[in-house]
Amino acid sequence: MENELLVKILKNTGLFETPESDLRDLFALKTSGKEAFLLSCYGNTSCRCYYLYSDEILVTPRGEEGLLTIPQVPLGFVRIDDIPEVFSSLPALDLMKKNRKLLDKVLKEDKYIVFKNSRKCEYCSERTKRQYYRRYREEILDLRREAVRRGIDPLNVLVVDGELSLRHEGFLTPYLAGVKLREKKYLVSETSLGIAGGDLFAYRAEDFGSGAFLAGLIVGIEEIEKGTSEPSTCIIEDEAQVRVYDSHHGINQVTGYLLDSREYFGKGFVTAPLMAEYQIKKAEEQGIGVITFDEEGEIIFVDGKEMPSERQSEIINEVKNLAYLAREYFNFLLQKL
Image (cartoon, rainbow, N blue to C red):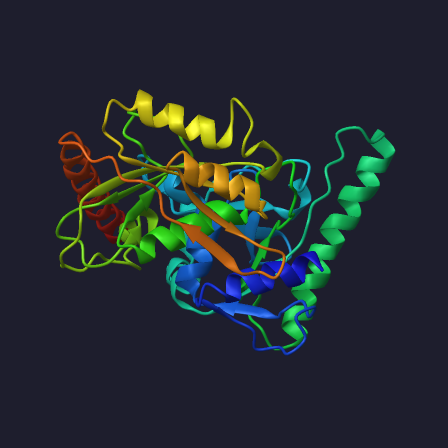
């Protein structure tokens, strides 16, 4: 049931489709290479995403952080024998040099999204851990073989650790928040330029005719069209559902972040899975926006109260410069491969 709910939520964004009539099918959900890449980049940091590359190696998106480092590395890899006990993504520059079409294939070819939870084993015995890790690795290889059997290129399968929990932040809500704000013509980023706390940040300039994710701009799969908008800057806090109205988390945390930002940010949102009606009402009462979904997979968006200030224009200009410079450096890197 959990996987079916995840499929419904993503389908309700209008960006994913279900070519299989049975939502329980492993390959029930499909999207563009662009959206699959952005989903993996902006899922919660505890999320483990990877493309099935070979019997020995999985390719992993490095996320926005990997795109803003020097050297800039959009992809990483992990050896199947190292997971899930160790899931650090190693830079894949050598892999990209050997396979120059790898990045294009990841970004531009349609992808199937497969959800697979990796159960935590912190309190298991060493023997139980070894047995679980061995079984987990074998399941990945079985998944790769099933893709080949169906005529699907394994590299066109993105595996996502899609656990839904009320007690922990989920993988889906940061991406979902970004999608809804992108629709509102915002540039969505994990970068706050050191001014405020939060999990995501959104910036809209007066000449934005469309929105984008910063990672999408950097790798050339998105662009911001020229147009007319109301300037705005937002802080988004990704929260566990049980802590949405906690005294030190969720709604109250966003309110504190806005005060601490010294008027550089004028609007706040809290995003969490399956928020209750009373939680949504409390957020509205405090002027905080809400991005969540219900048990039917319907997406709920409540806009936050805008508190504009002259300082917002300073940060918007800096973000526009950051996006331009990062994109130019990525183009330079591709020329060197």
